Image (cartoon, rainbow, N blue to C red; front, top):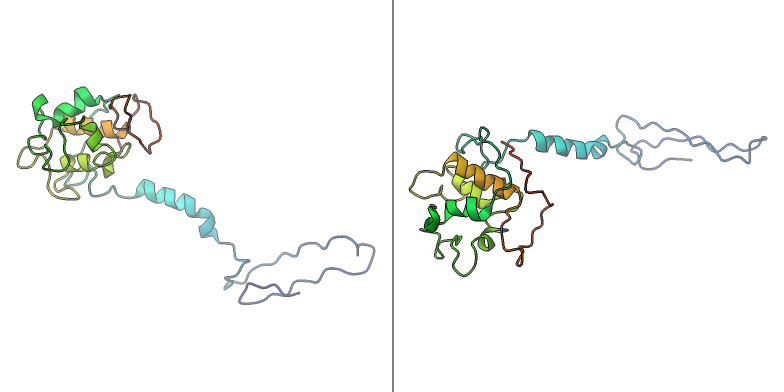
Amino acid sequence: MVLRGSQHPIRAPDPPTGGRNSNAPAAKARVRCADTCCGECHLNLFALLRPLLLLAAILIAPVPAFAGGLAFCDDLRGMPVNLAVDWQTEVKPILNTSMGGRCTGCHSGAQFPDMTDNGVDAIYKLVNTYAIPGAPLVSGLFDKVNCDPPALGQRMPLGGAPLSLQQQALIYDWIEQGARGEDPAQPIPRTFLFRDGMESLRWY
């Protein structure tokens, strides 16, 4: 009997015949692959270890260009984590000029994104587009205020001083916690694993 699936076929012993054990199932022959074997009998260690290798790559990979801690992004590692960040009282006042914020002077409809409450609360215009729930490092809102230059365009507020580290941290933690704060009667759909409002993570 010849085993297939190898560049170097190896003949395995034929099942035993005759004798008092002739009716017993034949023992499985152990076959070692040759060093150059690439067929079915080759143990693909990479395939078995691939999930662990991917996890290790994620953990040790450099943070993307729009993440803090790099030369052109503000480092928030020294800032305390803000727990249960509130959209209406903590985040919106950073953005809305009528509340002392810095953004709606330009982002008032003609300039994307619209951060005003004209027509609807601004949270409905930002979440899932400019603020990705649970993912501040890939959210344009955080990228624009944290990095100079950001991944796209210029740092905001345009032509002015950057937001304070405390304000940047509030935006980061709000997004990380799920970017919540809309009217409970009109919830925003989120493809986001639920995280309690008292939890937050700061990866850098």
